[in-house]
Length: 188
Image (tube, rainbow, N blue to C red; front, side, top):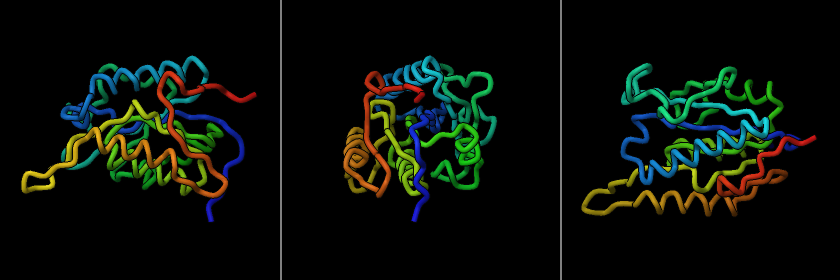
């Protein structure tokens, strides 16, 4: 059984908005603008922003592909999490950073929908966090299934948006919101 985290202290977690990840992503310019807007709105409301960067064989640390998109830069003092697995929680200090911030409700944006965003969403819920997926601020690329078949990125995004609206865990809230509709408010 998970530990349910009481309260509603938000943290915006921005996952893998890296040059190499977004290079071929579906609708990347719009998603990047929405992520930038979410970061701006969170900062204006005093909501902490946490940045996650993936590294692996195709994303070597400090390479050009590994860098965050130029439009998306952490502010001084914002946590940066470096990961090697799809879930931002695995073998990282994300949970310690969230505890330091008192975060109980995670707002999620970034890439790639079908890998790191999905893994992060489920891992957050499994660990007792409430979760809101910004439904217009995550993306991925098409998946080639071979033999001329593919799963289009737009459908992958739509699938996760629908899943996060309807999935239920005891004692936790999960849902989606558009970037401009997200209530980035700090509870008093």
